Image (cartoon, rainbow, N blue to C red; front, side, top):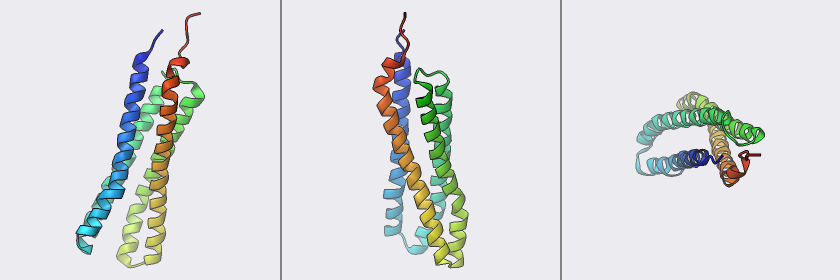
Length: 160
């Protein structure tokens, strides 16, 4: 039995995940530096406070959607169970990184408002590390999915 539709669904998932990662990278590498470089310090601060909250929410919601799709897809996929579990675990780890980073935002803002530069720097570093690790996990997930896509056709059972 030939299941081309599953390969198409996986290719669509890969494209959506790559777009998600691209949007996250664009937000950190392009939007934030432009805001800092072209706005005054107070304007950039006000913009970036709102921006980072929205950025993290989108990262978490996207992560939850990808994790849900991976978990649901693993129940009907012809991909071997251990590999499907790896995909689900990677999406969960990615989402967890973005969620924990999001929970640091109020503390980062409070430290900045209080003028506590040491706490601000430590929390900001932790946030950047978590977001970076979440993006790295997304990249690993993409690589794992692209790796398995050509083998997709060999996983399906053949008639005996």
